[in-house]
Length: 210
Image (cartoon, rainbow, N blue to C red):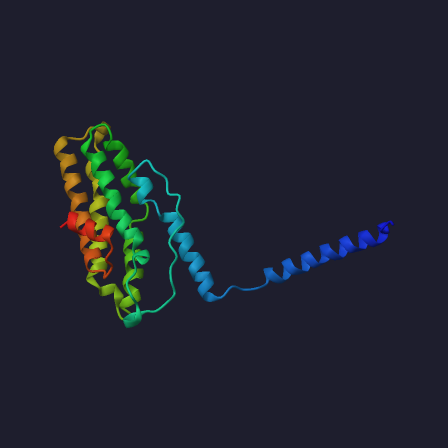
């Protein structure tokens, strides 16, 4: 038995036409506002989740955390995943301090700070996103956002401090840089202590940075 070539070609053309039709239909479907916003936010975080790269030799392989469009205000229950990047920023600073304390790696640490300073508003914005989940009225004025904003300024200020002429940096200067980063960590710990999130890791970080 032989299937007629003409019928086979017709069947293939019909199948191809159906594929084009389906693709065209999907192309004109406009995603919902929540889907578009969620995708945009996750892409933004993926692009800017650089703290672990900036302050260590490791690369970021994990996907960006999802932004939940769930309960807000009094109904919101604080969750670690919603402030994960703040915690990871705080812990990554231990590696930055280690680089500043070693004369041979100061420049590597400085390069990390330069990368961090490319977007100094990211972490304050991320903190605001978290606070806005529970504070629905004038979240901008919440002092916890100020902790992160100040921490980022302290971290970023080490670039100008250490960017000495001919790459020569005095020991007293590196000590000041370390002190500024440690103050930044303390402010991050303060934010976490007032965040309502309690995990073993978060509580340990808070205890280590009074």
